[in-house]
Image (tube, rainbow over the protein chains, first blue to last red):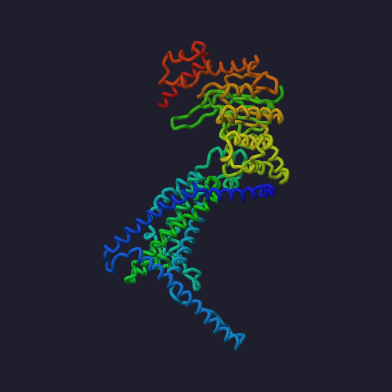
Length: 331
Length: 304
């Protein structure tokens, strides 16, 4: 095998160089300009329309925010974040200095550093949301893919669970949330909890809503393996596990990934609603808090959150697409 | 006579359909010697594939059965390797890995890593595919993929090689190339081959014996023809060889005179004078075929 990789290396480099040269050719450049120009025009027109029409919409919190207000608030949020970070660093430094002094007096002293108690900033909340959505999505994947494989492999099992899937699939996260909250409160009792209850509630709600596309697509992919390939597997007398691992799973990878992409999109949408109600300190809570706050900047700040949510959703989908291209054989 | 290598005895095959039972095969008997190349030929829908699938163990005969080297065939297995019409390579594996999947499974315990690798390369060399071992099936032509399919089947060291219209999906030139390749491989390995085809020239060129099947439903072996042509055979010089022409004529006569194409007996077109439009005329039809035609009409009516 080593000879194969060695012979591939130079070709990979030259392929890369060729691709680069192609990308810099005049035709490719005009193509790139064209590809960028039309979206830019679209965004520009949208912003102009927004800027002109926003002041016409009066609310009790002032007029609807125009792009310029949103831009200003985005800067503001960044400012708040950096100053908060600075304060946090100073807070820790102060404690370290104090601890050093205590240790100098008494080397056996028991010192500790308390974390900064300030409120999370907008950017901290983005981080929390991402962690929550990815945990929920991972949990959904871990449940949905194996279950989907079983459903796809066994017609009887599929017939048994199909009605359940059809009924639970369209349920809104808001309907699940109260139930999940109560169950989490009742069952997750610990003196030293590893997770916040709000985090668990949001995560489980995300899981419940986002596992269906993966489950359904996996089962379809598994059930749709080319009968010829199944016959090859039978002729080779592959064991059930080898058959699943070497034939069924690779064959359904493209379908599984299509499901995963849809699931992640749903997970992200559901998360915001779940965080609003569960008070998980993420973007959903940010929106809710700003709404409750009702200051003159609130609407602009919510609009910043809206755009951020959209942009992150787009990025998540792109990341999934890249992974899909790496993993799936048909791409 | 010595015991046959492979023997099909009284094979009946009935399928359950929503319209009731459908009898595909009726009392198929076949004996095949070791190293013999046998072609199954017949019109589409006559149950050729069903026979092959029963030998492969992919289907279970409803009556009768198949015995290979004294063992009854009940399940599929690598000693009866199958070459499928559409190569059936795993699209996510490279050419090498596709053959490796088979070799790893069949010689898991009996070959070392190096031996396996050598054996994989040997089989790919047999079909002239060493140059593309890192390509995926999507990156090579249909003919190349079919070569790999043959290499994969050969790599299982099968005692019978089953080929289900292996060249049916290929263009004429590629098909000729692969037929020549198959002939030389079979000459070299002396393997027992059962091949399904509906190409008369292919059957005569490749086979030691041609088994002609009657039209379905309730298809069975109609005639058998031994092709007494010396090997190696050359398609160009054979073209006007008397034996070759005779064999070809015999098969054609079976297919188009004795077993007219099933479509002709469909009730919508089964006008009394329909057959006279063709080059072959109906008066010569033997009784069996007429019976089938009648059966088919009733079957069609039952289904309508």
